[in-house]
Length: 563
Image 1 (cartoon, one colour):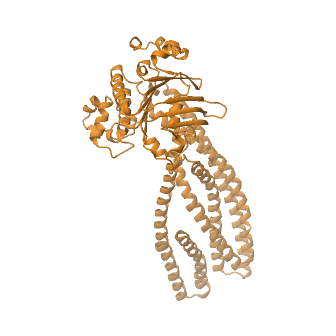
Image 2 (tube, helix red, strand yellow; image 1 turned 180 degrees about the horizontal axis):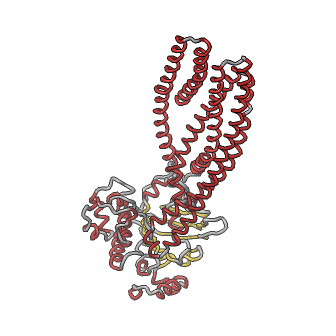
Image 3 (tube, rainbow, N blue to C red; image 1 turned 90 degrees about the horizontal axis):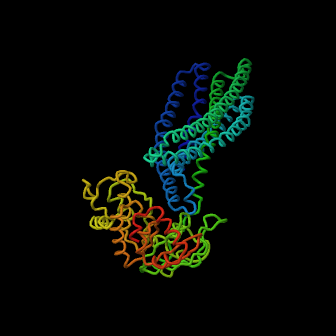
């Protein structure tokens, strides 16, 4: 409201200037009144000082604070919304596009409100008052100026529609390109190893050229809009000059009135041009707002704040005829029945794409089952408070994200209250202690974005250490030892099995050397459990398991002789 008041005062003050200038001309030219001239100059200077040095300063100060707080609020809500997206929507995220929406589109949101709406209001107010004075000075001047309104409005809307369509395509392509660049920068080593530098450059150039072409096309629309507006303005000016000259010659209009009318005409025309430009700019800002609103309107993951907050026992897990599919036309899991006793060490094996990781994702309720029930300690996962449930489940994937910062920050990412002794104990359990001892700054060592200063095996051990810090009731290892050598793998397995005495342990692995010591092995194929027993029993008569075992042997498993 304060912004609106300031803009109104500034606009009305600006509208007084042509009237005063007209009076100054008439006072000097016709009345030869020097005292009146000085008096009008003082009034003009006073209004100018009040408008530019007081009201404008207050307005700019308020706008700066409003812009900062508003954009911060929008970015905060966008960030929270992205973090709370449903699991089924995560696969559709483009990282670069999301960053663009948070950083750029949120600013455009505020620009629309201030520069387009508030100053649009100022422009309309200026045009309205200017038209009043044009009619006040001469009826024909007012009618001529008023005729501009529908012409300029139609021209603006014509070009706005074209510009908005192109801007929508530009934003989409920019989001895809940003995501591509993000992925390339994140995996520069792989790009070099694959000798894909040329292809990466070609893709970048092709995408950039497409965006540049669309920007050029958009620029052409903007130029055409400006030139059309300039042509309309020129015709109107010529008409105003002709009308004024006729009435001045006839003696029915004073020179001051002509100067004032010309001032109001220019103000009206300039604001017509400004609104015309703003309408074209709005086409870009509307696209940004739509992109922001699209995210804000998406359904959030239901954290069930009033759900059950139960401290798990050892983590008994029951799949009861569980069916799940990412798409409605195909099920990844098709009637899973499996009971994992609390405190058990269970392996899940199967060919790639059979749904092993999907089963894990259902356990911590990233996705909801399509039908059937999934229970943990006798409670349906859909009834848990998600914060409480996920706090008691720990997962280590084959590929893990290590955040840029210190070793301490990386280890205590989910809980910054962990003490150094607890962190070092987790480091020892994960066979990372020898690396830790070589670090000059210990826990304060900066490990680099995504662990770039660490080898693949070291990053994997650090990710495992992070789960040991969390110390959950259900521990899940999804190909988590794939980067480890036999010695470190054996050490971590021994640590895991010792820890698993009072918790449930799930292991997904293609290495039979990793899973053979588990209490039982679930054999997954075509979305159903084809066997659930010990390695010794499965290897005797379970055809699916035997086939997997033979494939592992044919790939030359270095630990096959010890199985």
